[in-house]
Amino acid sequence: MRPIRLPEVTIGISGSPEIFSRGIHGVIKRAVIIGNGFAGAENQCIGLVRGLGLSGRHSLYRVSRPRGGINDWLHWIPVALHKKLEHLFRRIHGSLRLRIPAKGHRVNPISFGQNGITDILEADANHIANMARENLDNFVLQGWSVACGSIWKGYHLCFKHYKAFSSRKCFCCTGKWKYQGISSAFFSLAFVFQIQHPRTHLNRFDLVITPRHDYYPLTPHAQKQIPWFLRRWITPREPPGRNVVLTLGALHQADSAALKKAASAWHDELALLPKPLVVVNIGGPSRNCRYDVDLANQLACMLQNVLPSCGSVRISFSRRTPKKVSKVFVKELSTNPKVYIWNGEGPNPHLGHLAWADAFVITADTVSMLSEACTTGKPVYVIGAERCTWKFADFQKSLQERGAARPFTGKEDMSQSWSYPPLNDTAEAAHVVKMALSERGWSILT
Image (tube, rainbow, N blue to C red; front, side):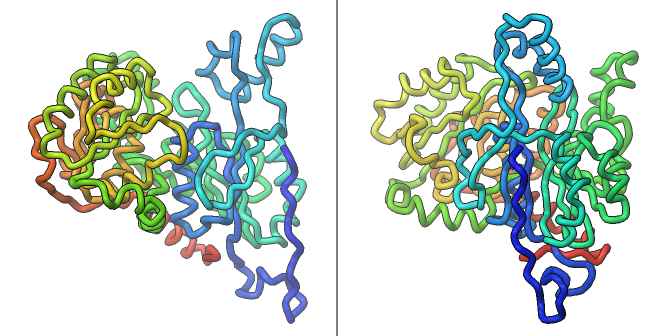
């Protein structure tokens, strides 16, 4: 990983670094996020960074898995172990075709707009931990916040958090990666919080920010689904403690500032479309929400039924949408003059859709897109919720009980609107973090 180049220290009138001008506690000025290449995971980190007022003052580094060959069968093990096994295979079977991403290799930047992300480099957790210990004085003097870490969530390692060193204190959001190694050096300086449930050792974190449905396994309904001999292996095993902050949905970047900016950017293309504008977001089947072209055909038929009450319909697909699913909508709806299907080329209209849509129809598999749409307070219709199992069914139930989402039947009059208190999970989580920091006398430079 390319070393982080720190700026020159600005010396104040008193001869002390400028970051101490507000007192010995100092402020958090920057964040470095370590991601895993999964947009949903990294989006939550960046969303919380925005909520904390650090938008435009963060960089993104990424830890990626080896891919290709036998690596495709090892996606369930932790990244660190995966890379060690790959190295062993390479030594034993030199002819085995395994793709190895080189450390420090530049990859294409992901598009987050003007968020201060200039490049994305491969990150190595061990190197980051060693660098943090070796350069503690630099972090203390320069007033930087560094975001990095990883969690072992179930059977795969995900990066959804960050570690921040600031002034004489450390502001942290991390998982199991190198916490023990760093905590000995920064124990009295560190504030640690985790995005999403770490599955174990919650007492290592000052705050754990996680969706409410992560605790679904503890409900009586879930316990009946788990054989008694497996219950001790299903996490979480204890109710949420005082350091756990529960959200209804996923954290994201679609805050009011982002939507206002998107409304302006997409005004010429979306503002003059016939109303109501109905946005359809198609995700992709998952282990706990399975569907195929049968649901696509069902949804296409339902959309044709409601078209008379729609002014315009815009359909977009996610990275996970199978081609055979997207082809159904192209075949059945692309010739209708009311319907526009985004082909994936050009700027992504997602934020523009959130800003200008009058109603949404979204497949049940995507927690992120549902969470974003429910932030707008506009009608959200869900297709396929009955196919969700386990905690994802509990998430759908929570949305409907709150009044934020309704099942899509194909019999709706889309010109009839309804509202609900918008979800505000990201801002509320950021507020809790700021309050916890203020109790320690820390602050974030905004």
